[in-house]
Length: 540
Image (cartoon, rainbow, N blue to C red):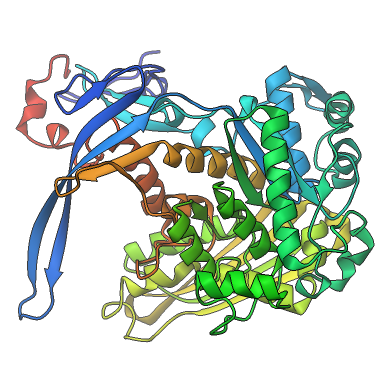
């Protein structure tokens, strides 16, 4: 029977609310945007506020700045070189793209399965475009806002300290269903990682038995030159227009930062020339990538981007991004702590426990490598806590925050994450939230790898200009727009770090909208909250 509505109120069925049209293609009709065959050029007024704390009361001043953005429309043929290609993440990324490209289906106990890119913000999420004449929200896939590389078109290669071909490595990883693996073997058996840089001091000793595919007999400078040659050879052999490098290999211990060693670009390059022991493999890869003009992304928590490395990227005007893929427990934490503090609830104790059985877990069972991970996981709540300094928290006060990771081989890639949040509430009450999260580690991380590569490549095609600039220029080489996908976001020196997940997501969405001359979505929807709503047809 039909549900009844009270007088003057339209009752919306649940199914009605799901009928929100999705737009695949659109053109912005505005004097603020123009389209050519080569580019999209938009004018955008950026609005923010500046607070002057030198006076009492504080003075708050609205500030506007006019930008022009130019986005190249031609999408390049993109090569992706993964350090750690034969690991669980590397094999899963390559296998997933092949399965999607070839339309491979496979059978499980649940029935026939089809490939998808679920978990990818670029491929499987939408952006609110606006509303139609009836006030209904209209959405567009995020990858439909501006032209982006599609994962099906990526060409993969890379390095690994183990020489196993990707078909065998995929079977070793035990991430994918067997019927899917069986069909992927012919596509992956001929993909063999290039020899990689192996310096035992930086990763756990328990990785030595995998290290049979390493660059030998070379100085650190020669290792950098070998990686540069590998990049050039890959680019020529595969006929790609661009190459992006991404580190998905073992977590390294933190490198010491020392004056004269790695504090400037000049000192870092000189230290490599001298063969200084404290220059890590990940930093050697980053140097090689930047010197070749290729974007480099660090997906592990170690401090690859020492000050000299950041300065080198700035001097060469090459993009870098990091650190540490954010796929499970930390992503949940950046949502939940933001919610609690935004609700005026005071988290006092945050305890996070993980156990996993893949090679990442094995490497992290070593104390120095775990310390790198602990640092990246622990900093995720800092900006949210600081936002309530003087209200919920006293200056310098911080909740107790403990992170534990244990290696349990039996669970393999299926990581278990357990969290307890104890918060102080009204009249000194206590609220406890306990979560259990089973994370299929590589199946969650692999879409992030694709997103990082896609967004980084896109940023190479976006330029901006302000009123006081005569020419368009690139964004800062440190790609903080990638923060949504990373546990410990790298930002340009001296700029704030944002960890709150929805602010990070909004940053991506709003920059893309600005590139096509659309305003940021402020969620006020005043047209539905004022008397204008009474003028809409079909209200009853």
